[in-house]
Image 1: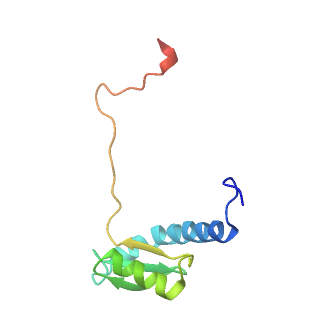
Image 2: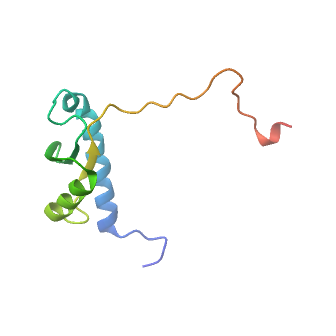
Length: 99
C-alpha cells in the first residue's frame, strides 16, 4: 500500500465517526436538557448515549473495549457548543497580491 492509499477499514471508520458526530450535534439540545448528562463525557454510537463518564479517557477506553479501535463511536462532553467571535473594528483581510 502506498502512502497515497487509505486503508478501506480506516476510511469506513472515519465515515462512521463523521456520521455519528453529526447525529450527536443534532441530539445535543436534548442531551443538554438531561441534568444527569450535562458536563459529563458520553460514549455515543448509533444515535444514542451508550454510557456517561466523568472523564474522556474512561469513555474512550470503554468505547474501544465495546466496539474496537475502528468501531465508529464518538466521545464528547455534553456542554453547549463553543462560539468564537472573530472580527471587530479595523479587522480586514489583505491579499498578498494586492500591494
